[in-house]
Image (cartoon, rainbow, N blue to C red):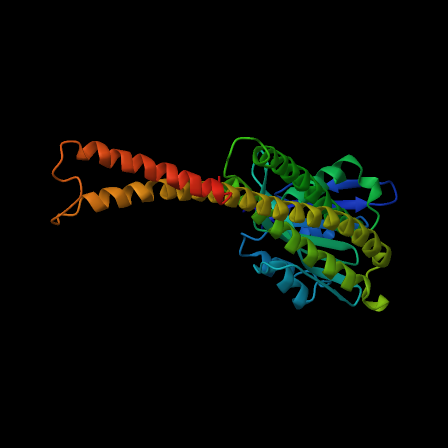
Length: 332
């Protein structure tokens, strides 16, 4: 009877790093659980899919992962968090989902845990930044000496993704701005609304990650993993730089929205001005026709043969009188 090989549940990829020769080993997707745990090397990176319900049971087999860390790796909560405790760092980071052929602007969540000799990341949907980190590992594994280096690269790739989105949104705002300041009257609020919504959402999540990174960098040194102090400083500087760009983009979108509202208000006021002038010119003729339309006795010009022509004359005189009054008042 053939032995049953227990594979790693939800395994997306697994790397074993050998820092002495600057190499890494990628395990096959069907690697057995025991073979993975017994593999040599300096540290291990596991990237797992949260869709597998057996994931929590598998993570319990790692003695280095306390229950709180396992809970953080298997949670489905959608808010960013970073926790440092007894030389470990774990929590949830913001990322962007990706399709098979392209990235999207939909928010995704990456759960992570970094401890001695091990980094574990979990996600529910494919993410943009984590795939770039995997490509970086394949290209130059020698730059990753400790697990915290993987964590730094993940946050750095998130920052680079933010810069890419800022450039894309800037180009969209440029196109909307050209249309707004064109001579043709256009309502660009439908195009601007999704851009503003995306920018506000990016800024909100970026500010959250930046605040968490600052708080983590100010934690007690006994709770920090080795080398995290320098990593936190570098990542905070990176996030602050892109935060200024996102804030400037948000302000630009807000001012552009105000410009569109101002232009539409001016157009509406111009239409109201034209309608007011038409009302002013038509009101005196209406009074004339209303007067001669009364079915009362003794109405002037009712018995003559040229009453209609006189009535039209009064209408013309009333229009001229209205025009003279508007000119005298400075309205025309």
